[in-house]
Image 1 (cartoon, rainbow, N blue to C red):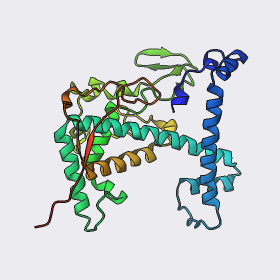
Image 2: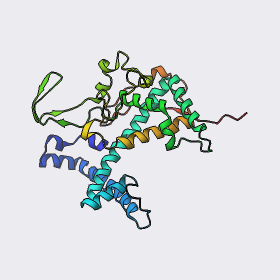
Image 3: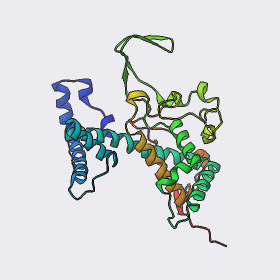
Length: 303
């Protein structure tokens, strides 16, 4: 992701001069090395799924790779097509997931009451499972209503990508009172949309997961493209292909982090003074690292 957002002379000089400058600066070599590493990784994934010893999924079953292999065989696509789709899902759902988890922890540590409420919900669900697994299972996620509100509020305030992928108008249209000619490239600012007081009220800049409670003003608002006041992953046919994987990664990882540990700031640090500045990159990282102290959670003794 950093490579995609880094400076390239060829962006400004799309000719032999730009390519030469990138090669002299080592950008081309780095780009090719990253491509080879990713290609080898996805090739290994495909080989694992195609190996004779690998159990074949039932009709319509299996994971994303199984589905892509099936489509490839039915429609004559090549491995390169499959790897291209996997790359989109991988980049769209991995780096953005870690960024979202960091921002969620940053907001939670500043709001102890929200952190406590989320942990109490998670631990109650795990305790109610009646098994000895001291961790959140994938099947627990649908029961974690408040955690989902925390994730949704995090995505509202801190979308992983500030500007969505560029769109281009197919015909002349009017957007917000402005005439936009056909063929115009349009950049959608997901960060500004999620903080717009016209949609979210005067407390739009505040971290309040309760705003998404069922029955409330924003109870039905979701980030899957149906509500344009919240679209950290875009909307329509060009919505982020890694949305499902990314959200599942965030919810599952964050739930286990909150279940397994008590989280505190280092001694001498005050939550109210925790830096929340953002760094201008392709994905919206924190400007300064988040440093927290985890203490393992110990189950209370029965009786």
